[in-house]
Length: 290
Image 1: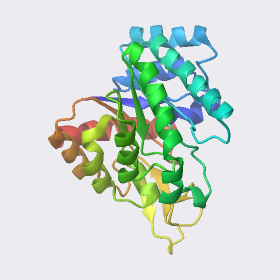
Image 2: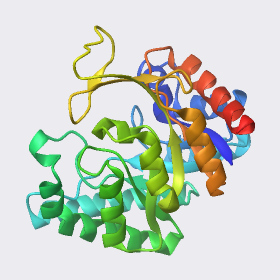
Image 3: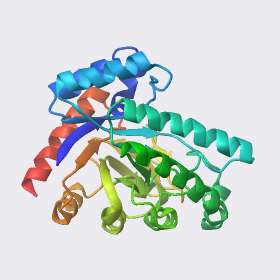
């Protein structure tokens, strides 16, 4: 088991210009992390080969493994031409992942921000053929590099555990699995414990985050709250500080025999470096105590 950090956790510092992606690598190495997930927000690599090479070499120098590349994607397009263009775009990122020396990539299968009518099971079933086709094309393309591609429980259309499994089983490729995010089930009002239990057998990488939860009829006031699919309130928290039963989930994952990368995603209101550091430290302590 190796604990690391997503670059997304330090996005405020990246966007403000306080940190570059190379600074993030060095920060992770200096704060107890063992690997880094690349989420290309606040910087890009696919159109910047010099920076991509610098990231690869800096990570080697710092002793930080590059665990996962995580990107937005949407196979549900209006025309065949735009579908093919999206597939080609994602393939360019697969080539980048190979250039970085990475073996794991997460891509979405639908748009992340969608209207309520696209959150339904009926819409997913209607869209499933193109989701499956696109996912197979990317997984098959990635086999030449030995790369595992994944769908995450992320985005309101394919976020519940059963829907993730629906896509996984339909795609039916040995190198297409799931990036299991312990917190994202809550965005569609599913218990994190239940979601983790159900999808652990399909997981090739695990994200840890924490949320504060308030019921739909208990408005929490100001702050960076957002609404779930059914109107409840969530806000990012430091791992171990929020309302997710982190200890029980750690025990479930440890008992399963999972021994791969575990990535901290911090999305709270606290200063991002502070929240990320405490989160990694808490997760390591809870893992050792389990």
